[in-house]
Amino acid sequence: MKIRRITIALAICAVAASIAFAKTRKDSVTFTQDVSVNGTLVKSGSYEVSFNDETNELAIMKRGKVIAKTTAKTSQRENKASSTEVKTVTTNNGVELVGIAFSGTDKNVLVDRGGEAARNQ
Image: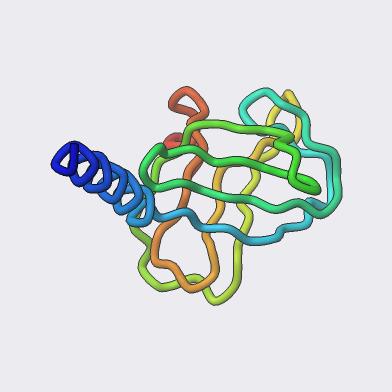
């Protein structure tokens, strides 16, 4: 029984350690106009954005509620972002979120837009 408890404790520690190493970046942003996030309309206003490096998931939240969620990828920047930057593009469908660079990081988080993101960079 003692060996089983030790095994279970080690398994719990391994899971907790893998969660701890996943990098999730979070920051607050303000959209000055309505923005589409991979097809989901996000009204203008202040939101919290988070990106999980492990799952490649970008989430837009307001008061803890997920408003929009999409897959994204990272690309290297030349310099670290001095503040959180939001990149949008105007299309025939309105303003779309292309990516975010979190303050202090040297990575751009690019929204998966079905290949369009690469064409508009």
